[in-house]
Structures are given as C-alpha cells and as structure tokens.
Image (tube, rainbow, N blue to C red; front, side, top):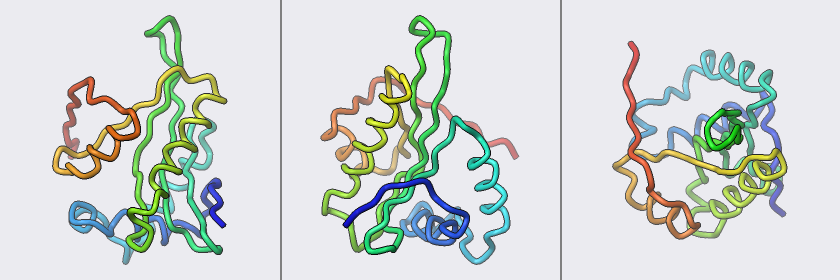
Length: 149
C-alpha cells in the first residue's frame, strides 16, 4: 500500500539517497554528510508554506517531492504551487508512482487555493520532460538560474 505524507527528520537520509540516484544528482549531492540536509529539513519543516512529502510503500521511502505554496500579486493575487525535487526510487520507476506523486501535489495545491502549479526541470532531463508533458504540464516559460557562490 502506498502512503504519501509529510517527511520526518528520520527520512532525510532516504530522501538524499533518492536525490543522489541519477547522473545529475550524483554530481551534486553528498549522502555521506547529512548535516546540511538536516539543517535544510528543519527550515522546510518550520515553514507553513512548505511541504516535503515522501511516498512510502511497506514503510520504505520510495519517492519524494517538495511542494511550496507561493502567494503572489500577479493573476489578481493568485497563489501558485511550486514543485521541486521529484524523485522516484529506481525499483519503482515506470510503475506510475511519479504520476501519483504529481496528482497528490495537484490536489494539495488546489485545496490550498492555488490556481496554478509549476515546476522546473533540468534541460538535460528529456525523459522527465516527456513525463511532465504526458501529465498535462506545458513548457510555457523559459527558466533562468544563476549560481550564487
């Protein structure tokens, strides 16, 4: 049985392992030192506009995403939701878990009054782009990022 719920501090190691389990994540994550991840978890967990979710199957973390509720002035003061860090365990890929996670995020965003849900995906993740498009997401904007330090 699959359960999607708020992540606990004890889930951080499993979440980091998911983040590191792909070619891009392997280059930027450091699962052997959780100290900065634990600090980040505390900040996320304390913020009422953040929801770090895990998907559990038989008690094991098999997926994750972070949902951020963003109040705004544009679109007549509409709130939107931002999705980050969508990851599915290698054993679960291709079985519909990613779709379930995004559908869950859409429901939660709607319950919170958001009129739009958005996400970014690294330009190198072509399979992920096809996945998001199948779920109805449109590549309607160009995203820009700049490293700060």
